[in-house]
Length: 161
Image 1 (cartoon, rainbow, N blue to C red):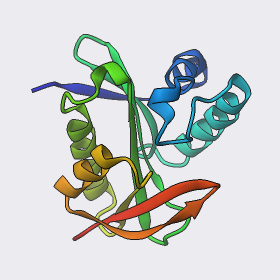
Image 2 (image 1 turned 60 degrees about the horizontal axis):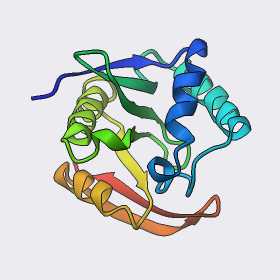
Image 3 (image 1 turned 45 degrees about the horizontal axis):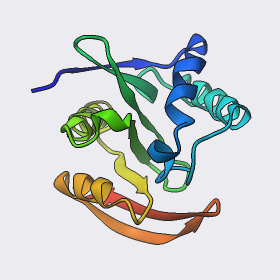
């Protein structure tokens, strides 16, 4: 089994983040296309702010045991649903279909249950992202809303308790 290490983003990580989010294929189901440098910088500033709210919450770089950068993930307070956390993940395309999403979700859910046992856990995906939906369904998530949010097709899923 692949072992991963999560490490919070820090201000010196912008270049690594930008390389991840500028790729159109990797970002297809997140923003529709890769981010330009200005968009990425704006998002990265937001990531650093959200990561400072609580030591167990934020955006994390994901590494394997050989220190290869696999992508990133998040566990943050959800602004739209009281008493809930939102999880998410972005995996570099060369690591797709290798079980890394499952390992990341397992870690994020375990973190949420251990540190925030009364919070619901949600995830937000593009409705066309079948791989993400199947992954979340493995962890007992079910869809509760579909529509357009921030000009992007959106589906929200909640983990059944």
